[in-house]
Image 1: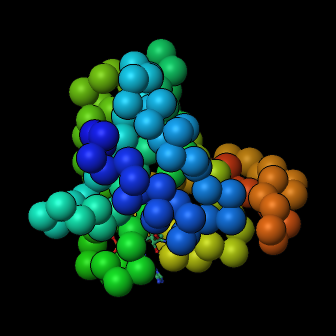
Image 2: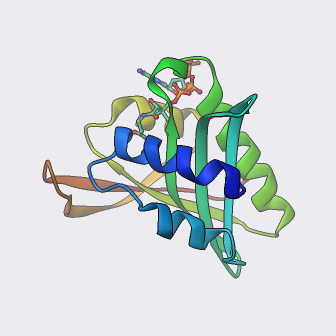
Length: 141
Ligand SMILES: CC(C)(COP(=O)(O)OP(=O)(O)OC[C@H]1O[C@@H](n2cnc3c(N)ncnc32)[C@H](O)[C@@H]1OP(=O)(O)O)[C@@H](O)C(=O)NCCC(=O)NCCS
């Protein structure tokens, strides 16, 4: 991700999530040495993105979204594979994330990629209120 992608990512955040990241918080990630974000682009158009934050040898995935009209073409899979590969290069051994319990498309993607449920956060999400499942992949290979 670079500055030219921030505005479009903010628009996708608003289209995809009930608690979207602001343009300002996305831009702050550009100078965060622990942040690792990747975008899928076609020309100058951002089709999808994935965002994570690294702590010494673990990482948390904070965001993944693909534009509605670009879904079911393997873009999320490509973003996730790319992220896993980059994290491995940084010596990261596990990746954790939260997902809405009702988000079956995302859960299918994570299950295919070897993520296992390791916990649940009651009423973690608002609008609508819903539990988060905590998933983790470890090791990343
Ligand atoms: C979840 C999301 C990122 C998937 O993006 P995508 O580019 O359409 O996904 P891909 O085409 O790479 O699909 C990869 C796998 O995900 C699963 N999947 C994706 N969409 C699915 C759907 N609508 N129904 C069931 N499984 C689905 C499948 O296992 C799929 O593999 P397959 O095509 O071999 O069956 C996309 O639907 C999205 O942006 N949703 C809104 C934001 C969101 O929920 N983000 C996740 C937050 S945790």
